[in-house]
Length: 126
Picture 1 (cartoon, helix red, strand yellow):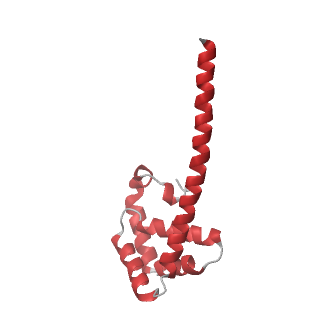
Picture 2 (cartoon, one colour):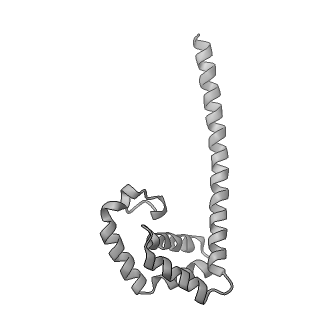
Picture 3 (cartoon, one colour):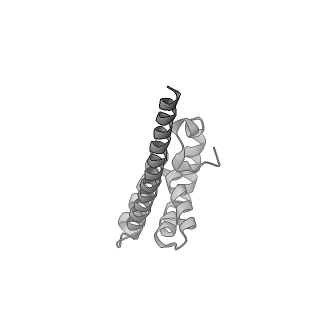
């Protein structure tokens, strides 16, 4: 489970560890991790760094953790009047959407070609 980004986990992947995850979330929230993550995501120029911070942010709200969600909301309301955090998330999600859309178009083209090839092969067999 640890090598798969948290954003790709299914409930089955983390449910057995729910208690441990909640304890880790609690500790990280108490240590001020939410504020740190928001600042990293908002201001980092390194895509790798802010994407990793985004994964940690997802881990903090995994399972609907109310305390974590509240801390994110508090940061946004109290510390981000320019909406840097939300704008960065919006940009990041848009980039992910474009990436998925582009790859899905390629996948659809390959699937269509494979289906056409299989149809031709079946017709030649008959």
